[in-house]
Length: 57
Image 1 (tube, rainbow, N blue to C red):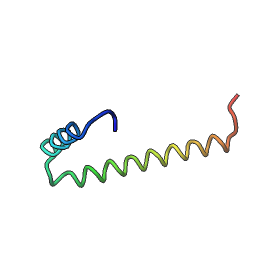
Image 2 (tube, helix red, strand yellow):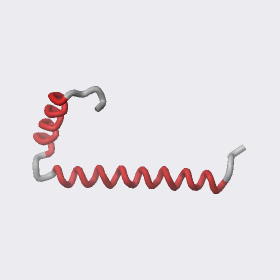
Image 3 (cartoon, helix red, strand yellow):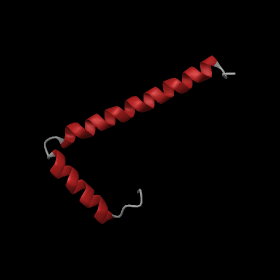
């Protein structure tokens, strides 16, 4: 995964935990998940609009 080993992932997780705190991690996770879903939805809508409009010349 991105060239990171288990030790590096644990260090990153520890830094995130210290930086954001344990109580804010669930909110952060849901916000990131919602942002990813909205991004995917926007990409799909853009692709659908391109198919509907046809090729641009």
